[in-house]
Length: 199
Image (cartoon, rainbow, N blue to C red; front, side, top):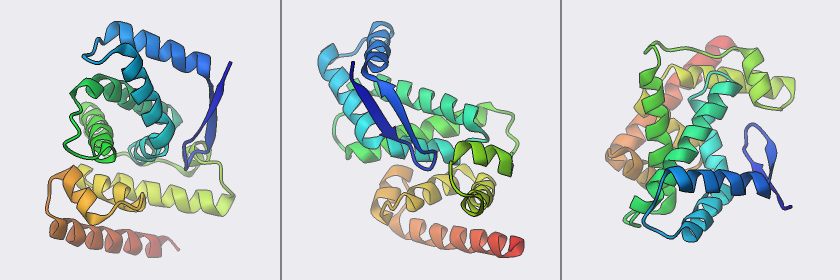
């Protein structure tokens, strides 16, 4: 049996046996038929999760209040990636498409919830990120401040923190590059002001 380890920073790494991935793919192929052959689809899906799992986890982290929410979001995103594979035409890069699927899934989930803005406590972040105390506290504060942003600003800053360039962010969000630059500047100022108030 093959074991695959995924780096799901900032949470850390998890190991998944090849058998579990195989069962997941087989289950998904039964309930969601596609236009590609099952083998091609499974290979594409596995490659996406293997090569881009950190993007998915980072987005889930930004939109989650706790570890369980993060797991649920990750599962929803993976299901939507599987569903969307047969419709991916390569008109944008795979990474751009992946961000769209992940962010749209998260925003939809947030809208389905009560609509209120919630923040996460330091204890929950400690469970979500295995870091030293100072790093966990700073990460908790950043997560808490990001959670108060609008869905669009949250998406923008999440991609920026993931070192995506302005052009990629503009393509995913559908706003101009200049608008992305202005929004990032405002978001950074807002986060810096909130951070300086706390420390």
